[in-house]
Image (cartoon, rainbow, N blue to C red):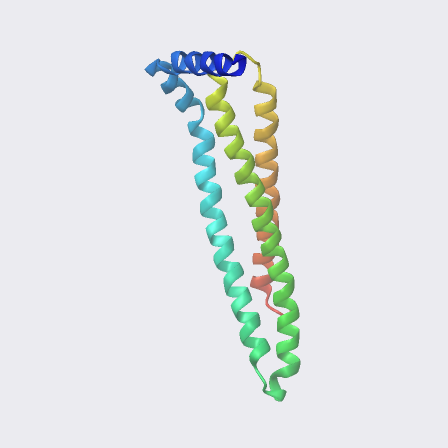
Length: 154
């Protein structure tokens, strides 16, 4: 009974707070920049995943090759490709973490418009963590592209 009354009071309070169009507009505006960053991270990850798929496909084709004359060369290339695959996987993993953290930032910025708790420091820490993850993911991806540019012998 008390929980029902408390839930109804919270729901009523939430409806009253979000009924203001300017309030909702302010909440949406404050979460817009991180939302654009999320789109950018998604675009970068799309490129990373395409590269990872190409690498995996190349490994499969080389491992399916039964020509003994090309075996030594293909083994060296497969080793090189496996290192590149690991770098690409790490880039995707860390970039996914960045996307997850920035999604939390977007939600918190929206919610912060309607709560009294001061969470600005926490949001700033999450923003820095997002950028740190993004930089780390791009560093892994940069290492992978450098390896690709140098070739298997480089």
